[in-house]
Amino acid sequence: MKSFSIRLQQDGTIMVPKVIEDKLNLHEGDYLNFLEIDDVIILTSQQPKVPQLTEQITTIREQENVSLEELLEGLENERTIIYKEKYEF
Image (cartoon, one colour):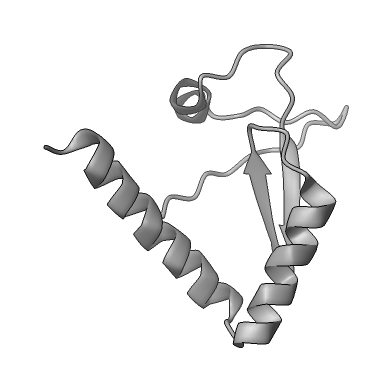
């Protein structure tokens, strides 16, 4: 999992790191979304149904007794598997 620092400007804007812009194919004017799960904020490049998705993730985590750290670790593992399937032959 990678972490990137983003600085909040005085006027409330943020600068997305160039590496993220390139990876997500972002362009000026694109909309980004903040997804809040407990104490973690996830920035997404697509327009998910944020309120419903957040509620569903929280409900499933509580039902399955999965910590936020376990959830994030599982996401990283799934991302690695998908990457390997897509790009490694």
